[in-house]
Amino acid sequence: MPWSIQAGRILGIPIRLHLTFVLLLGWLVTRGVLRGELTEPLIATGLFACVLLHELGHSVVAKRYGVEVESITLLPIGGVALMERIPDEPRQELHIAVAGPLVNFVLAPLLLLAHHLLEPAAAGSLWSQPGLPLLKLADLNWKLGLFNLLPAFPMDGGRILRALLAERTSYVRATAVAASLGQIFAFIIGFVGLLNTNPLMVFMALFLFIGAAEEGARAQTQAIVEGVPVQDAMMTSFSTLARADTLNRAVDLLLAGTQQDFPVVEGDEVVGILTRQRLLQVLAESGPGLYASEVMEPAADAVSPDAPLREVLEHMMSKGVTVVAVRSEKGLCGLLTMENATEFVLVRAALSRRGSSRTG
Image (cartoon, rainbow, N blue to C red; front, side, top):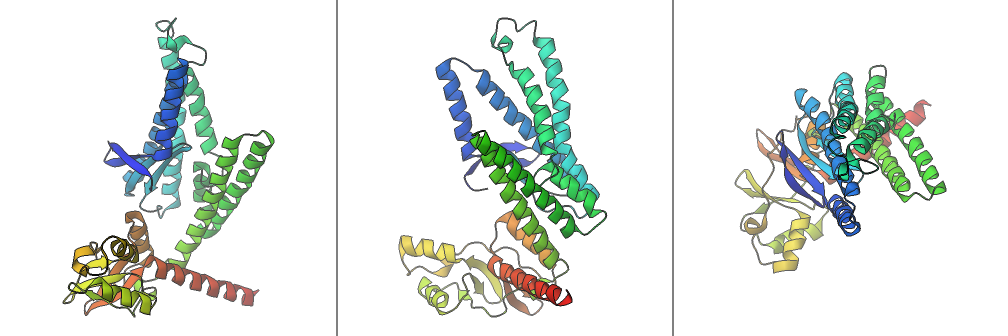
C-alpha cells in the first residue's frame, strides 16, 4: 500500500504502518506528554494492537485454507489484511471473516479479567485513573467486534453475509446485495455524523461507501473473467525493444501508437520490461540517450496463453505488476497489461448489458 512503511513481520506476514497512522499515534503521544496524561496514548496504542490481532485472526485462518496474506497495514481507521485472492468456497470466506471479530470477543473478557486482577496493585497509579486503559480497551473490543459484524461491505459482516448468500445464489448477486447494504449503512452513518457534527463518522461513512462500491465492481470483474483464458484479453499487435535500442526508439514507438509498455527482448527471450512510467522518469532525469538494457525493469514470469485470466490478474494486482509477457511453445505471442485487461472487461460488460436489454 502506498505511503506505508514496513515495521516487521509476524508469522511471516509483513506488518506495515501507514504514514497517517504514524502521524496520528505520534500526535496522541505528544499531546499526552504535553498534558501530562498518558492514558489516551496508552489506550490508542493498545487499541491498534488489538486491531493488529484482529487482522492476524483473519490471516491465520486464511493461511490454513492456502490463501497467502501479502501484508497487514495499520491505518487510523483500522487495519487491512491484503490477501492474494478471495477463497473459492463460500464457507472458507465465512470462516476467515468470522475470525477477526472473534478475536475481539476473546480479547474483551481477557482484558476485563486483567483489569480486575491488577486493580488492587494499581491503586494510585496511572492504571487506576478514570477510564482505565485495560477497562477501556475491553469496552472498545466489544464495540470493535460488533461494528465489524455490520452486514455490509467492506466490514467483516458484509463478507459473512456474502458467504451465506453465495451458498444459495451466484457470487456476483451475493456481492451486489452486500455492497448495496454497505452503501445504505454508509449513508446512515454519514447522515448521523453530519447531524452530530462528527467528522470521524463522516469520514468513516465515505470509507464504507467507497469500499462497498469497489467490492461490487471487483465481483463483477471476476465474474466477467471467470473461465476466460489470457489469450482472449492479451495484446497481439505490439512492438519490442532490443537491449541496444536507445530510449529515442521507445519514444518513437510510444508516440506512434497506443502501446505504453515495451518488452525488451534478446533473441526469443523477454529479458526486461520498459514501462511508460519508467521511460518518462528516465527521460526527465537523463534524457533519451540511454539504452533499454540500462533502464529496463525485471520482467515478471511469462504466462501461457491458456492460463486462467482471473488468476493471472489477481497475481498481477497482488504483486503490483502492470504487464506480463505471454509465451506459447512458438515464442512470445502477446502482452497482457492492466490497461488492456480493463478494456476487455469494459467491452464484455457492455456486450452483456446489450444482451440483457434484448432479452428483456
